[in-house]
Amino acid sequence: MPVAARVKAKDFFTDAEWAPLSARSSWKGLWLIVHCWATILAAGALAVWAVEAPMPLWLVWLKPLAVLAAIMVIGARQLGLAILMHDGAHGCLHPNLKVNDWIGEWLTGAPTNANLARYRDYHLSHHKFAQQSEDPDLGLSKPFPTTRDSLVRKAIRDLTGQTFYKQRIQPSLDAFRTGAKKGVAWQKTARGVLGFWSHFLIVNAILLAALIALGVWWAYPLLWIVPMATWYPLVTRFRNIAEHACIAEGEPDPLRQARTTKVGPIERLVIAPYFVNYHCEHHMFMHLPCWSLPKVSRMLEKKGVTPRMLTASGYPEVLRMASAKG
Image (tube, rainbow, N blue to C red; front, side):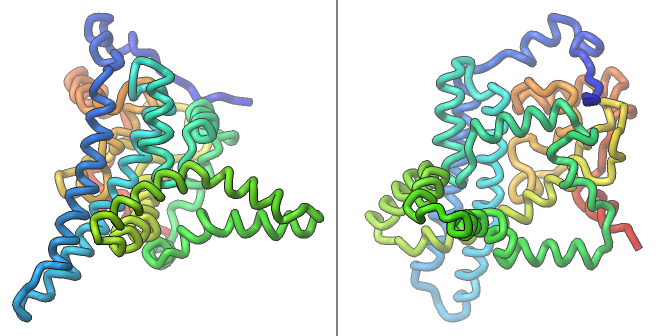
């Protein structure tokens, strides 16, 4: 199997430059997790306040607007949790691997039913074979470029919950159908499905219980499940497109197997949190903690490396490129 070509840190950095960039931190990963949950809670609290606060009739329109804004921010931070779990898959969240894996599983993965161990095996294979025929993520980039109508249809499926259902709910239902066809007792299938969902159910039960205790149970479906079923799939699609779409299969240049996309503060808030846009740098140096990527990017620019890398000026450019067919 052909593996993707790689670069070495020493090709671009001195040992003195590289050591602080690659160092693991006992607090930075934890701080980003706290920041992510604090952002989720703040956005949710503001939406709850807006919904329940008495307002004059001429200001009532602010209520749905606040809920919509919260859905976008929370959905993006659910992606943020996935990004931080991704750092955990690379062993970057904490220098102690047991701590790294525990917080990566329970504080970042389980809330949205992602599993660190399963993801790690899959994702490291993606790095090994990036944009090569064995890359397990190649199917995410192969459909592009597509037509604008096709991209719009995909976005509609994301925002209407169809993608969420297909990716999250349907596999469990299919497991019961497959088990029934094979004569497997439904109790056995149920145990398997429950095992798959178990960490998610535990964390979400705690979250729901807390909201019930606060007297705002309705915030769980509206401000946690709805973002997970709508905005989160959409921004995940945008992220996938930006990272590898319109890159040739078998691309030999390790500086052009992934794309870095420039973002501003609004994009960081609702589309690309926690430095996920520095994807070319991440593929060049996959064991760097995410918080080191901006500095690495600036250093590579000063060293004249950036023109050799695959970059985009922003998500609008990437989406135009991805929908330029026909």
